[in-house]
Length: 230
Image 1 (cartoon, rainbow, N blue to C red):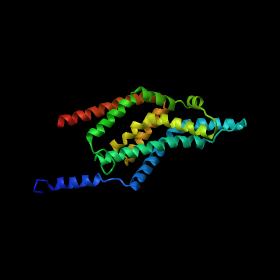
Image 2 (cartoon, rainbow, N blue to C red):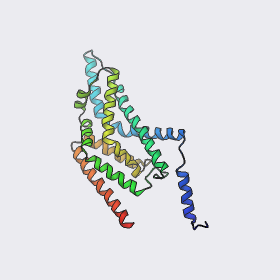
Image 3 (tube, rainbow, N blue to C red):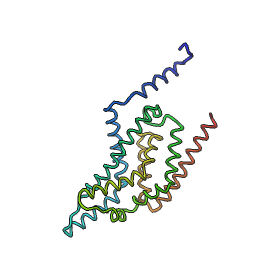
Image 4 (cartoon, rainbow, N blue to C red):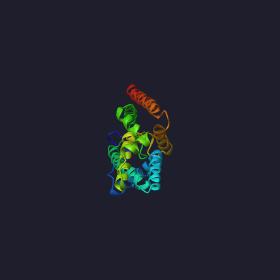
């Protein structure tokens, strides 16, 4: 206090010290569980068209006495890939938390971070890699025929491949959870709805590019405003 710190600055410093405490193994596990459950809730609905095509192939194969692996094996591979992503997301959250860039509600505490995530997500929506991954996710019949593998291990690998394309399509969008809040159910539902629409509706690819451009614009305006105010 003799150095001129106010009560508010002392409280802010104390809160920051508490916020950057090291995570325990239990806390990491609980956060990982949260991410895994959230990814299942958000991403399984977007894989329904692909799952239905696989299930139809499995029924046809069973009728001609040439059974293939059950549908749940294919889905398990898909979920396994998102489980790996959940580990990466938890590690990223831990890193941001240790840098004091997240609030206790798991929202970005840095306007620069929030704006940068918007710009990065928007730029990725316009990238060729995004379009390539999205093309696989939007063509269930083509994906199944092109990636078909026999047996249980083959079905699991097919699910892993679908999950890899899906992660490649959506990974940066999950970073936007830190912009609107990881625990903000409305924001989570909005991102999930956007992912579902861009994968399924006829003009999904065009819509994704439009939304990407809007995200870049919002992020740049936000950064410009901060520079002007600074």
